[in-house]
Image 1: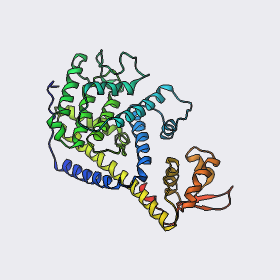
Image 2: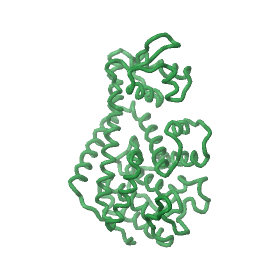
Image 3: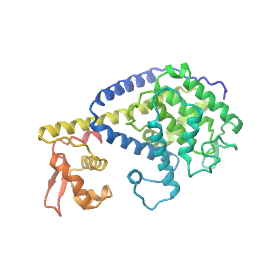
Image 4: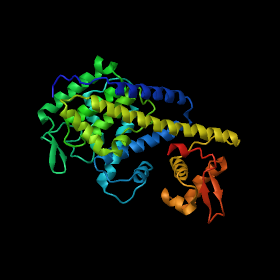
Length: 356
């Protein structure tokens, strides 16, 4: 790897198409943000999904409902190490989102990001510090990648930051910049552990600071985790092509576009909710995550009994009754039968079916 970093890639037709469509969706979301009814729920959902999928890529065993429980401050039987990884990711994202918008991400801030991600997991001497020993990337017991040695890690990381904060990095499209930083940092592998998490968090950080995800409402890491084998293959493919990043940029831009399309459908579901409020003469409500989950589950079923619905989101029947009440009053959910044997379904127009 060159100490003076200059990324290599071609601006292919596929890449340009993805960037153009993604930028259009981003502009659409900026316009929708004038109506803030959906922002809080979307931000919380993105926080949970980013933490869950980024840590799961590296083997964290917690399920999405368990990560939701951690976000709600609940505890449950599980390995403390696994819970700590997720809680640290929450802290890292909140720290990122509290930083002011702008371009500059310096070495001190990057090391602090790693410290937050690994606090209580790595020894204090290794958390927020460059590696002191050589490391490698394994597939099973086979080494598939040998990163630069420890003495090169600080120089290569600083070189990446120089490019990131220089004219080339500042003038490039945010998706390209964030994808390049992601791949470069995970290839430098500057830390003893937590390199993947740090690289993905850095990507989210750049998208936020460069104004592409100002409201931090989408979770790109879900795209990486859905086909984890492809994610690793795409990273490795660049190394086999003498660090030509073209295929990686096409891959990441595809992921951003697909993620934005899912987020768009989610935002539109809130608009349909508002329309339904007006049609029924009801006041607008802001959905809680569990209420939204109920609507998503019902969108996949013709009808569900109360017990089955409660079990699917891991709550009691009494708690289900409380979160269903506003949905029933607003006309978002229809009830059939008596209280004990009641079943629930979406109204015939099923305003949430499209988001599944």
